[in-house]
Image (cartoon, rainbow, N blue to C red):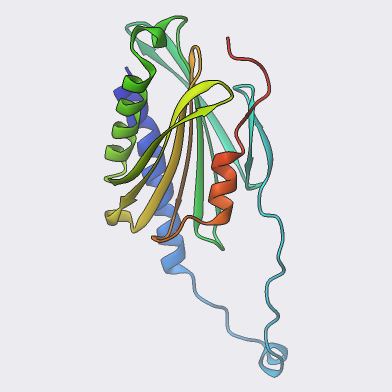
Length: 201
């Protein structure tokens, strides 16, 4: 069941990465106007690029304002799983953001230890983006077990940082990708901004 769900998330994420990369490669500067030739370009103003976003899964994060949301339901042997996927991007900084929330049938997540499930979910997500695991760490967010990790995706020329958090009957996944190198400040803020707005269950 999770293998299929993580493949959905990874597939969406790969498409997002490819679109961002293609857009960046095809961008061309417009011919300078006469006024632009006579004066040096002013530096871009520094501004807050992330804003609060409240998800249907009763949690909030900081994300770019251009976020889009989609929803689907997948039938599984244990019952229907409701999946919400939200995406956003910052083309100037080359950062992509993905948020997923999956609502499982009651009791479905309690059949395996959290670390086993989180490790499996991490490995499937890394595999789905053709990535190579760089680092991983167990975390606890709002009393829920989780895993934070970084992976490189050489085929997409991207680095991926993510957090997977397991609630009672929910799995929350926050993923961000950016050009290879140090994790941008905005990516760090996004991953660390997860807040539950209503208790799980």
